[in-house]
Image 1: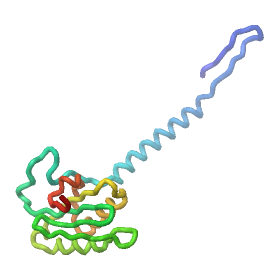
Image 2: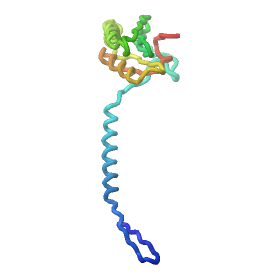
Image 3: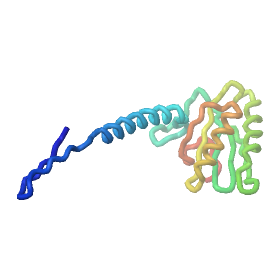
Image 4: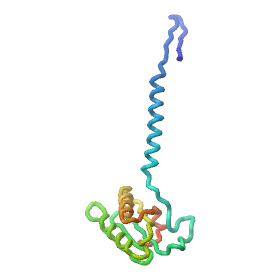
Length: 161
C-alpha cells in the first residue's frame, strides 16, 4: 500500500492509505453501468424514418397508399394518401386514444391495409413526449407495428398547409 511520510523537525509521520473502499466503489459502479446498459437496450422502441425525408425525393413505389398520424397540442389527425382525413379532438385533458384506435381499426379493415403493418407518426413541437408514446402504443394495438417517427413536414399525408 502507499505510505505518506512527512519530513520535518517533529519527526516522521507514516500514514497508510486504505484503497479497499475505493476499489469496492469502482467495482460496484462498473457492475451498475453494465446492468443499466442492458436495460436500456431492452427498453428501447425501434423506429425508423419513413416518407419524404430530407435525403429522399420520392416515396417507395411498391406501396402507394400510406397511413399517417399527426399529433398536435389540441387534436390528433389521422389520414391516408387516398384522401381520408380525420380529426380527433381532445376529450378533456387527454387525447381521445380510443377514438384513434377505432379509426386505425377501420383502416385495418380496408383491403389496402389488411396485410400492412407500417404507419407514419409525427408530432408538432409543443406535444409532450407521453402523447407520442401513447400514439405509438395505440398504433401497435391496432396491429400497425412498423412505426416510422418522422418530421411533420415529411408526412405522406398533408394535414395542414
